[in-house]
Amino acid sequence: MEPVRAKVCGLTRAEDALAAERLGAWAVGFVFAPSKRRVTPEQAAAIGARLGPFVARVGVFVDAPPAEVLEVARRARLSAVQLHGEEPPEWAEALRRHLPVIKAVRLAGPPDPALVAYPADALLVDGPRPGSGEAYDWGWLEPLADHPRLIVAGGLTPERLPELFTRVCPYAVDVSSGVESAPGVKDEARMRAFLQRVRRGCG
Image (cartoon, rainbow, N blue to C red; front, side, top):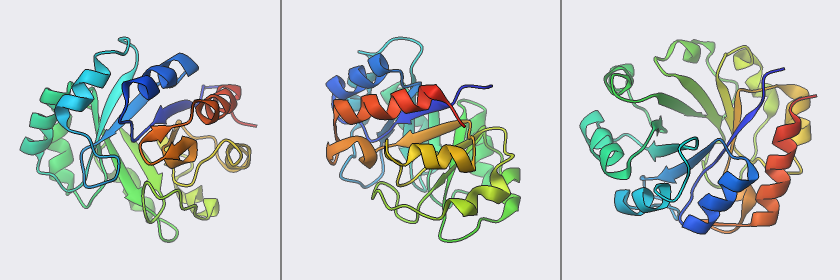
């Protein structure tokens, strides 16, 4: 069985990124859109420089033009970008010439299956208010369950992972508020519990 990968998003502190790496995260995420967890490219670069070479550094953007995304990606030394707005397919195609692209969609109901045709390297599904910890009906994931690189986010916690894995076995899961003690401040014990459950896989 393929492993389930995990990204810990909304990082603002090097100690949290290092803990995420040590506990088994495949990727860390930095938010460059308006958010309580927003960081500058220089802050992200400084945190990322503390990590080993096998941890992906992902930048989260909302409706930023490709040229702006690429400039931030260069300064922050990102290895992938996550588009969380209404970015047209042409923007993703332009970015994919330089970096892998994750397209995020906010679910307020069952998704349009045509989303699988969006030109991205992975598709991330989130709740209606990303970063809020707000959950949604995981039955909505069924039209996308066969996507080869489906990433599930939104309302995930160590306690809710077992239920998710009985419904769908995604390529990866993405957590932020579900492992925090305050916005942008990760709780190491909750990260450990989350990542231990991810390592056990689906079923």
